[in-house]
Length: 136
Image (cartoon, rainbow, N blue to C red; front, side, top):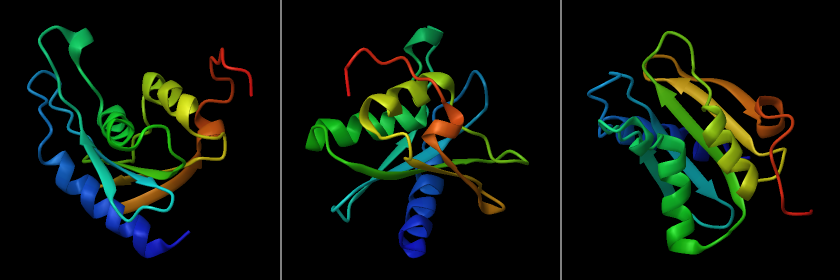
């Protein structure tokens, strides 16, 4: 994988994070998703709602945007950025959505605004046993 592409995605995720709407938690998250074979990156930010179930995480915002534009395509990697001291992984709901569209070895890069990319994990490390009703 091209490190410059991951850095480009990190920059896109940082920018997307600036647009996060998080008046309830104050926890702003940015994400950027790469599709294999496409140069375009799909950014996402978290958007909270007073009805908490209506909240959408940055990772799913990016994923759903990419699917809306391209359908089910091969995703290359995702970068997730927060402003916490240590990089924060996606929530279980986001991981489950990733498992619907990505292989177990899908890379997820975790970073912070101040420190940059801190860690690369695979989907199967974060969600070893996904709920899956579609036979592989």
